[in-house]
Amino acid sequence: MSTAARRRLMRDFKRMQTDPPAGVSASPVPDNVMTWNAVIIGPADTPFEDGTFRLVMHFEEQYPNKPPSVKFISQMFHPNVYATGELCLDILQNRWSPTYDVAAVLTSIQSLLNDPNTGSPANVEASNLYKDNRKEYTKRVRETVEKSWEE
Image (cartoon, rainbow, N blue to C red; front, side):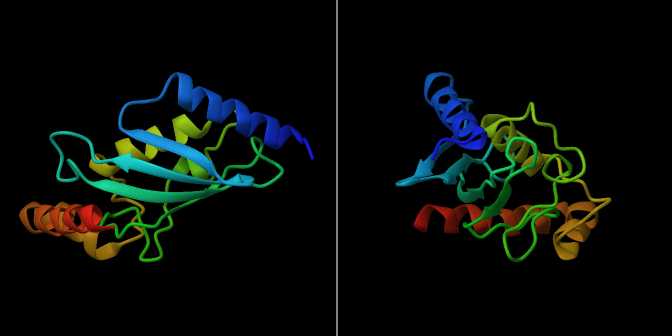
């Protein structure tokens, strides 16, 4: 069944293949264009550097008018990531625009890694360490980077 959402997702996929953003990749799971597996590589010169963080993206038939749900599968220690792996990111909630595509979502998440919003923390411990004890925060993040290599 061809729907507007499915057609748009196939365009997003083609764009990811022909013009892939640096440090992110994503593709639909076999036989279901509405669910994607994604990987974000931790940005250079950040505590997340060299991490390989896996995510899953779920799209509804209302996409692109409704944002996807995005969840880290890899363990993540970050002020804007809940223990469940779900993200607190404005473009996935109240600041969503149908002009955003899969690449834009993933690059926004990648930039959030090193530029957290501590005013709206999903992980209070990570937020407090980020603000008050950057050395310990960096240590905890590096532990998740090392775990990401084992997944």
